[in-house]
Image 1: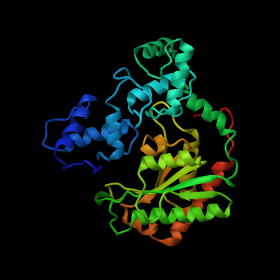
Image 2: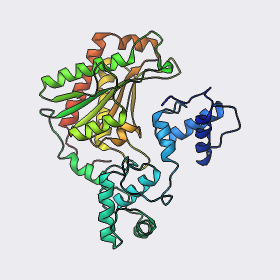
Image 3: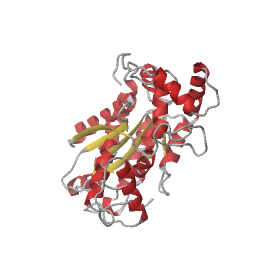
Image 4: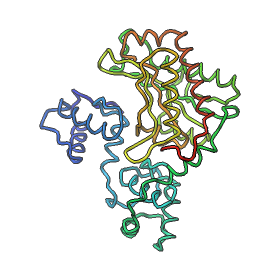
Length: 358
């Protein structure tokens, strides 16, 4: 979709404004997408753990659609394409906290959620039809206990931490060089963000191959693969980890540093993803002297829809002229690739204790 931003007009802007108002973020009367709408979008993005840039892109639009549904608004069941929304996420969270494994609380009603729902219906003595309706919602509410804070996803991920890969040898690693070139992300010195991401990903792939791993790239020089397709690719190939590589952007030309995101919302986060994100930014900051902007939880589509641990790493700010020039230097890119490979090796070697925090 074309991003909706300050200056945009038309039915799409009106739709965004209606959805924001319905969520308690009233937009003052204004023609088109003005300052009030941008401010409301930023507040919404912050609450959803998305990049708060005030632009309604694909992730923000999907989140606005999801937020339109609350548990009980509609029947929930397995369909193609899958039902998505906050109501699905609420259902997943309720089932998961009762011990029925839905996988991540991603707001997508997939096969794992269907199986968990049917298991719950069987155990609760309601009709086992895979349809979450009034009877299922009532039973879930009656069984809720406040002390059940951890979801099955958190519990299983904690248990799996001790059984995860302790070496990269033989492991499939999906490297995802991002394609996000657009007018508002233009480098002041003409550096091509897409080319930087692809070159670093190829350098990491070469080093991983030398270590005995099996790296795969989501793209070459051809057109990019849609984000949901990349998540499906990772899930189908049963990769050990996903590392998306790109560059950050900020309207303030002085912003600089390396930053990463891992899956997480206001209730659950991926411990394995967070650990790799921390290692990646730490290793790059140590190797290059770049500002460590740390790792942050995010609900962006790739992180939310991928079953393996996933990280989106931004190597530097393409909007900063000095940093962009460094990113354009092949020697600097090699340093970045070596630091990332080192982070992946350290991530695979770590065997957390059973008491590790989620």
